[in-house]
Every structure is written in structure tokens, then in C-alpha cells.
Length: 199
Image 1 (cartoon, one colour):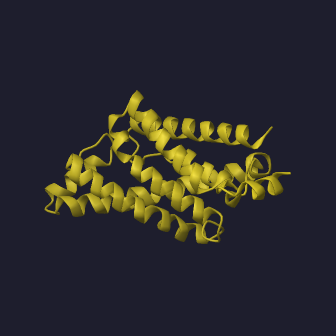
Image 2 (cartoon, rainbow, N blue to C red):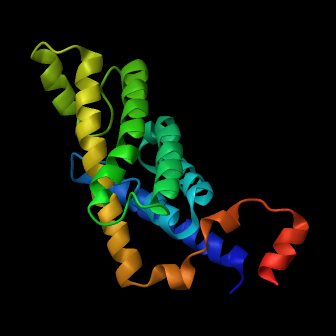
């Protein structure tokens, strides 16, 4: 199997996982998003560039099928793919550092999600965590602050669970050996370098 087909299959698998996870979370009112499992899986196998593509395509697919709010959170998937792709191939998503790495992925996405949720939707989206925002706001907390608190908690937990799940899938299934590509090799290289690298 050539590299191009391998990349296409992994991305398609990531999109399916994102959409399926988001659908399950929405259908069963799970207070986490479950829409970045595929993005993080692709980040581990192919690196940030293809992970970002997977995340955006997953958001667009979910938006066109069952959750219109997903369209607006495509930038969050870009951040997830970027940070997960960089950190996955460093020391920050290995062993006990996984908890720290998940924070480094979760904080930027939390900020982006909070801004989108507050500015566009005033705290109310399709996610079940919106109910927590409403409760905190009624208790007297500022709306933006309420959204940010909820996003930090839900995003961190969501990303931590997604990272741990994808690491288990990749390691136990030996997926990197079968489907992985060194992510630096996915960066556009001069033609001569490419020919030398893949000859």
C-alpha cells in the first residue's frame, strides 16, 4: 500500500471516529464531546497536518448530518490537531506526562471553545454541558466565567480520555507500525528530498 492511500484511509477512519463519538455523546447527553478521538488518533499516526484536516472534516460532517453547532467549532479541532500532533511526537503524551500534555492540548481548545460559545451562543449549545453553564450563571457567576470554567473541566477531561484511549488503541493494536508515518515526513519537502526519502 502506498503512502497516499495509507494517509487517506487513516484520515477517513479518524473522521468516522469523530462523527460517531460526537453522535454518541449528543444522543446520550454525555457531558463530554467525544468528537476529537479520531483527530488525536490521526495526530499519533500521521502528525499535526493531517490531524488538523481530520478534525475540520469531522466537524463539517457532523454539522451537515446531525449537529449544526459543530460547524462553528471547527477552529477548535484545528487547535486540537495541531497541539496533539506536536505533543504526541514529543515527551508530553507519554507515561505520567500524559496528564500534563492533556492540559497543554485542553487549555487552548478550552479558551477557543469558551469564546465561540459565549460570543455566538450565549452559553447554550447542543452539548449537555450547557446545562452546567446555565446553573452556574443562575448562581451568580458571570456568563463568560461560567462558560470558561465548564470548558476547562470538560475539555481537559475529554482530551485526557481521548489521548488515553487512542494511545491504548495505537500501542495494543501496533497501529503505528502498520499505518503510521513519521510526521516530519508529512511536511512538504523539495522534490529531490522526496525522491531520496522514498526511494
